[in-house]
Image (cartoon, rainbow, N blue to C red; front, side):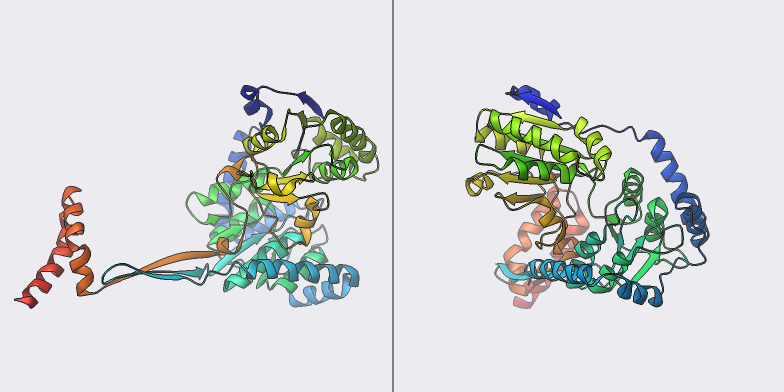
Length: 431
């Protein structure tokens, strides 16, 4: 990891930059695949599954028998862990329910707002080097609580045409409606446009590689909403002399093993802690099965020594991390200074993996600095807020003239007329 000591503020923008990928050629490939899916439906999806996932499929549909087989295949320990995580995620997201509002903004003018579930949502779950069955729970659980009528899940099968059993179990536990064997760009296209097997959805959720992210961004321009723009995963850890270097190193490495395009960012106010964490990272990385991948990630990651906590928090807010771990004794006071972050982990025992799996918060979060403007997935992500207004005759008297004047000054005469005819009717009644 690159070590930077006491950087000047004008260096912060450069320090907090993520690794840049040239996606020009990638965008062209993605566009071609999406066009094929739009025009040929299932046939194209099956062809691309053979090409990219090396599997010859007869059908894209995951059958009820396959789900039952998975439920009987997964170990009882894992099944119990999935149920524990699902319970905690459900408790946290249930608490986010919005009951709506009604307010009289002026005499006779009643305005209301209520939450309405998105009827059809699509979930994409990667199934490559690390099948993310936890993401099934993170996305399907709030979708079910929100009241989405149809929850579609796409995930790539293995070379034998089977979906990872833990993914199927998580889908059953969380209430997914239908599951399809499709990965990558072809899965995004299938959910965006609809095929003979896969229904078109209104919003697509879920992580993926750079091809999946590019596909989500392309379909979001014209065809379907997406959860958020996203890039590779990342963590920022803030430490001081009270931190445990073993814990901190483990937290950094838990993010580094995600993929070579991930990034870890370490900020400390203590030179001794920097040295201890550096040594501990090098020791622990050698024990990891995915150590080569983690080492590659560490090469473009940074350790930054700053003068005080105030500067540490300001630098973190400039970075706007997906995950922020405040691994200090005074985490509560520092938490009040958080402005830009996807999800925050407080104290010595709140490791990122707790949030990734089972604490209850959602792990689908904005990356690549998007935490400056976006929040992570929550119950509202699966809903729309619809507003209502009702005007009585008294309401027309309250705001009618203001509407006429504003419409007149915007030179929208038909807008003015719509109010004027109502005012005239009320005035004629009074004569």
